[in-house]
Length: 137
Length: 418
Image (cartoon, rainbow over all chains, first blue to last red; front, side, top):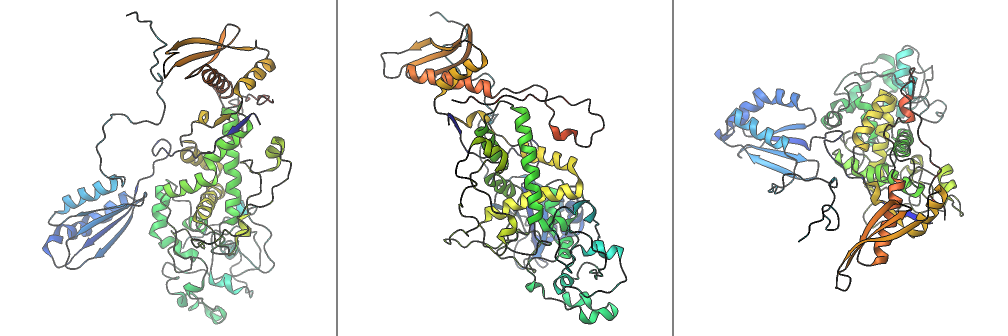
């Protein structure tokens, strides 16, 4: 055989064709007794149904956690989970935190240095000293 | 509970049903409501709306009434008159896979359907069935074996036609490798992971239907005989043979049939790929091919694969001279374009391959020979990776009355044979 091929796997580019939301599950934990859960309880009663309706891709679960601060735990497709304690937050604050968890992708927060990160190779190619305008020094 | 008549479009999916073993109870129940026939206990216990076996006329089944039935299986046959006496309910733990009526209540399935942007008319029972590997449930009316066979052929068809139309000059080994990169077993398992599929620890009727159901291969155990490398299709395997008779990856031995994996512990990868294939098959059955094509384009063709990195040339210079002779070009000549540091520790030579006055390719290397080889490989890739500007794939004309948009595709005579 003059030619053989190298086996590989095509890389996913989420959002290029289909977009898959990376947050797959949100757990809401509340306490009926503690005052720190007040906002969380209001959120669960008033805003959570509409929030869940707006985000059908996410699985929601609500469970009591007595004698603890309220917490939102998000599970992501890459296997990680993030949790945010929402003690003493009001309804709006809890909703903001839930949206933050829903929109994040489960990776650790890190600084993005370069403005563009791409797996496509540059149109101009790698700089090459032998091509382009001849510069006489 | 929703009743979905699917037997109309899906009767080709499964083999002939066993006698006296009806498998699309909803369809039959819809047509013949009031006849009484004794039938199999298992079917009585598990009604299924997505099974796709031929319609047999003289069957009466009892539909589970509403949500909450499967959680209290004893109530399933409690209030239905004289037949209730011999409808023996099974406890959920004895079912090999979740009851189809549990699908509507699974939040995981609802979330999965929305996550994949599938329309709500795609029934959750069908989605639940695609998650049941034959190793969990040997009954072909409840597992995804038949759907995954259909999906495998659809995936193979769409991928290979897209590759062959877009890159008409690709050598066959590269075509096979590219197909495998898009829809090979590893790729499909990765896709399932990226869709957020979780596996059940152990399959069973009480498990959430949104989990992948399969019998796990224990860590350290040997692969089952069906999955191990078997005797090849043929001992003298030629490229023609690979194209004509093997599967879409040109593999040397036959993949195991999904029906052969009943009750066999399998690795997660096997179950995940069967799910993805079965989902494609189920989409085809329930929503039709235009939607499958769109789904395929969005989820598979949108993946990034640089085909130029798949080539592995042995003797590119010889191939290039054979190619030039075949195409009637002048013989390729390598010429030094520029160089630097010839006597230093790290020289760089830039060599171009010329056919007459045309430069076919160019490469840089730290020795003259390396640069020449790279230049020849670049020239060969430039030839093989030719891409027509306007491409219509054959499947885009399926069922079209107006064929004026069809553009015939280029068919190349193939790679260089040395």
